[in-house]
Length: 532
Image (cartoon, rainbow, N blue to C red; front, side, top):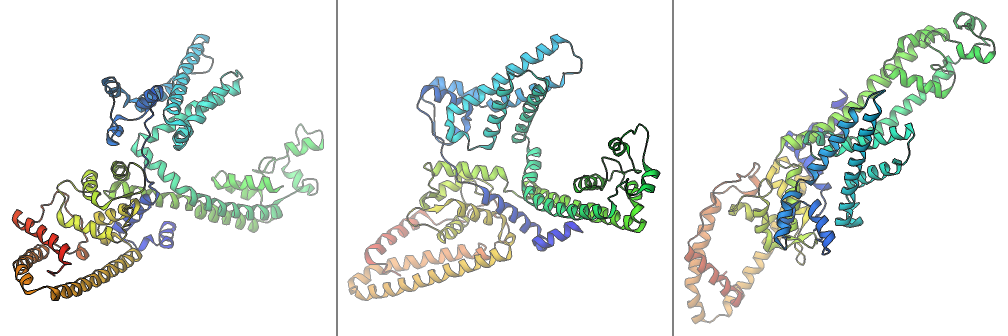
């Protein structure tokens, strides 16, 4: 019931499965940042470190090649650099698991030496990345910042030999296991779910604290007791053994399940006791022990708290995490556009925008889509109808000076891949408004072209008109062929399903007709589109 209520409040209960998938995919796209080309250092030492920590596949995709055969031979082993570090982390944790209480001195020394070796490896890794990337680019990755904190913390605690310090240093070493999340796909899904749930969990925590605060104040007012004021209550419940002073009497006093640790005598004790009861620990015994204020009062207080504070509000945490988990899984399993597809889009974009301007020219769109490949792109040769559809959509947000923007092209390709039915109502209304606007612009441009062609045609002499008649006949034939091709293809507005990736291309015109069409275009530029 709680999960359904959250879905209805968010509006996701009214969405279809494809629309839910598109909403989450759109969310991933909104967080995708424009890539920046890596700056290959010119210094020999920095270049050596750069080749170690940067993958060779990425270097080849960025168009950066080695300058010598030695670089190519060295690059064949550095692609496993990250796997080597993950293996060292796992081995370091495995060595820590071999420690036990009252272990021999020689084994303690062996473990200490092994830990020093691994610490040297992790420190060397940090230094190599810093030299290769520089501090500016190194701190852009949160994983690098996390590694730096672990390494620096371990180095600071290294000279200290206290037992508490050694235990704290072990925490730093174990924390490196979080780096496995980057490699394990399943763990990455759970980690993303946790990160996405943090805002909702924070809001729910504030609401739960408010409920605990109210119940703690009420509990202090109802169940706080001074055993020296209520003598019968103290005599019947206090454990008087070993009590010699007033302070010791208070220390050893117990009232059933209420004692010096669990009571309603102060606000902070009541708050801790409520948290203890929220876990289900002996809450009914605490209810009976506090019944001296009235059985009905104690029963209503504790049962209402368990119902409201535990069965309702604590399940909000489950509902929030479950909602985000379903959202992440729907993107990973229910659709083609996942994190890997978005990562390929960034990599392909960087090849055509090496200066990281955020725009690519319209003339490079075809090559970009062929390089991108499925699912956002298509395998070459590109279907002609699909390519024209992408161009028409890009014309709606094309910057004439800079070209096609990064994020809008990504969203357009996502819509074409998942289908127009996956869009929400608001997005579809906006899309229909854009289509209507472009149709009006196209109609206006056609009217202007017809008027201009008519005026130009009237200005031509009779001899010039006779020369253009064969070309006009050929243009009409070309238009008939194009109309037949369009009739056998689904219109964009009705294309609600996915286009086949390897679908056959619509038959093209003959080479001769293409050449004639090119000559007509050149003649139109000279005569001001007179043939129209």
